[in-house]
Length: 590
Image (cartoon, rainbow, N blue to C red; front, side, top):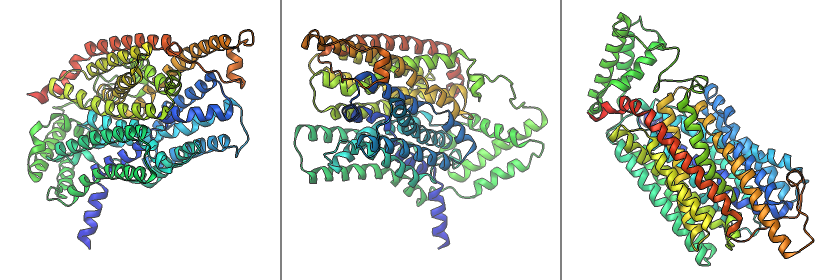
């Protein structure tokens, strides 16, 4: 019985279990990516026009990206408390929207609807922050893959929840809003006590490479499976029984990764408890070193230890790490090594948010993200109207497709950017520049409106947009440190709604409604006077509908140009940070 309890404790504190649980939470955290599916029912039920839907989209983007409170709470409260706050916000915000759309609650002014969408989607920032903070802290030497996989599952959330919605088989499209309100909150509450730092830097195993390979394989299989299921359901009228089988297989694929922590817990590779004693003993040998210095020394151990140490047998690895830590502590106490205490940190060290805000590198990342991800988010928010304008009836297909490509872009962006920094010691933003050029081609296809252009554009924009959210968090942690990662990450995400506010809320919606007014005048000459910008924001007018490639032609060309500017900014950052990445990763290649 005692042995079983020990194994259960090891399993509960295994960093791979935390990682897998974070993947599950992220699988249901992609709330914002379903806006393209729920906006048509909101538009028709509340008689909104396109500009008013665009305001709701901006409110959604703000809620999805303004995570100051989530970042702050993650530093002062346990991560489970942050997850609980996010679950409550998600349930209240979208639950109330569902009540209004279904007529169970009185209709509220547009600004109140924007507030509810903001509150509901803002719950996602708590899910993201908790998952990423626990991930980068438990896997400090594998930030690219971890961030890419976690953000990838968030991007795949739209396709996963769409498949679950297909299982419900409800003729009431508003039930999707109800599922968005309940599903993510239930998953977050069920797993909130598992998501936490567990000292993952002390759980390095020779099998970690194989474990990541298994996770990547599952990601590719999952994305391919969802794509295949989506195409089958779109082309063939499948029965409810077949849909149930499809959804069951989906859940099996999501559960497979838990095999990793189970096998590690019951394998002979389990770390013996002597490591903690060795590390504690090395600290006790040097009472002249303060607790703060010990943290710095341990951080330097992670940087200074040879690469092959992690491949040694467990006991030998523990002894080597303890010896290196003891030497650094002794040297610091005698003054032979000066512990870093700079008032202004250098690149690669821990920055506070205020220290980062005065650095040019930080703002280059911000504006590159604003132009790149902002243009991608504009497509995501308007995907329903874009597909309808080109004559497609089933907008859910493109919402699911861009969710899947977004997922693969995040996983692939994390994987390939890690190859760039690990194998070549080259700045991670080189991969970002490539992704932004890919997005530029995607926007060009949208602008042309050729047959099949929706599919190609969705593919390219989805891949490029997803890569942003694997590369930027990892790069920010490398240039500005892990200590205040939550605050830094949540500030950078403001670029997303800022871009959407201008590109979608002003440019795309104005051009769309302008073209719709022209078409309405052609259909009803002399009966259409148009509406002002202010009245379209505050009032509920007759819905405008635009048809043809012209609806988003100019918008897509503008977005194409913005992506080219973003790629130039990324290459400027590559030029500025070459020496940083050489110092961070160059020694690992020798």
